[in-house]
Amino acid sequence: MVEYTVGVLTLSDKGAVGEREDTSGAMLKELFTANAGYRVVDYRVIADNQSLIASTLIQWVDEEGIDLIVTTGGTGVSPSDQTPEATKTVIEREVPGLAEAMRQASLEKTVQAVWSRGIAGIRKQSLIVNLPGSEKAARENIEAVFPALSHGLYKLKGGTADCGVST
Image 1 (cartoon, rainbow, N blue to C red):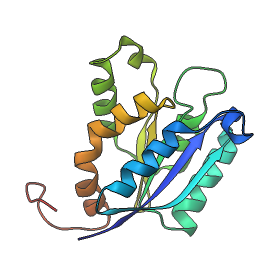
Image 2 (cartoon, one colour):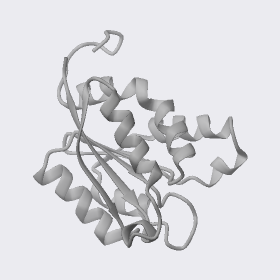
Image 3 (cartoon, one colour):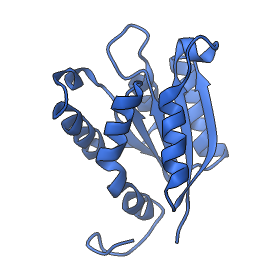
Image 4 (tube, rainbow, N blue to C red):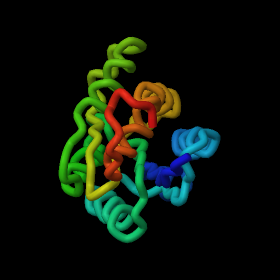
């Protein structure tokens, strides 16, 4: 079985200075660790600062070669929410279907999902997915796309099996 490396990046001004516990990042670490085929290799809590987010994403892709990066936090409309903007500066191609599927799944639970601005995209051979900051919303969003991730990563890494074939 192929194993993909995962980085979990929590964006939280209060979390970065120890004023808030990171429950969403911890949940994501547990989720990926518990599923065969994924290995969490990096985890950080940083401030929701566009240049800091972008430089961390670039480091994780360009230097560490992490296959999948999930961010949590900074996807709303608060003045400090910078995650989608930072992600857009580093990706080469967007994968709108992932963000659409996550928002649709959230909309089935709450109308407030219309405020989520998270995106998903590719840099080199790495996938970056923005998730909301609350543990509940992050779980709902990642569960909406989790079954599709391994096949997408397989194709991103150059896999040649047809999309109808299980990878």
